[in-house]
Length: 160
Image 1 (cartoon, rainbow, N blue to C red):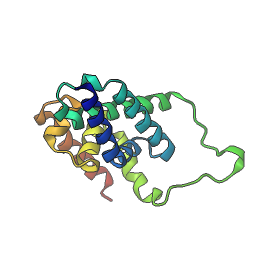
Image 2: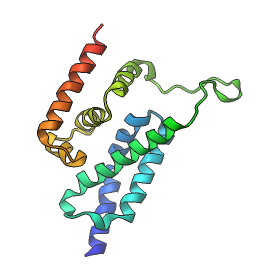
Image 3: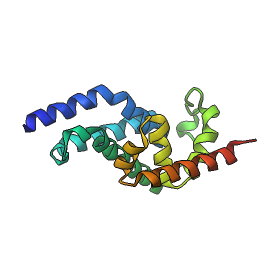
Image 4: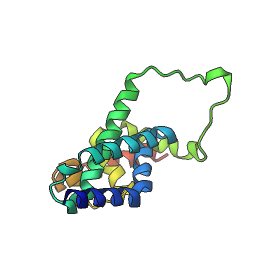
């Protein structure tokens, strides 16, 4: 039975690894950091796969692990002192399309953390409101409220 659960978790992770990376990337906007987050989340999930109460809840369970890992990584990074100057005086690499979306991400980062998470899960992972509520351990009405207020705030800030 335990091996069956383990195999299901491994297969789920393999099948959805690109989605996991995409979500992690929205938190850090850096390829290597996003890969680190996904790797840490996978390791944590494989160590604690027995904690899944129902294997049918694997999606919400793993996304909860991934969101917590992403938030912990961001908190850790925010504590570090970072220099804006590139090392060795070389030009810094900029992701293609970086300037086009940076304004959106800056505004998203200004929202409360729970609101950011709701928006990321809803639009980047295309989760239903019920799934988001399960991942974040909130009521569906709270998720709706955070989504509405967050989108309203983004709309107000991004309209020129």
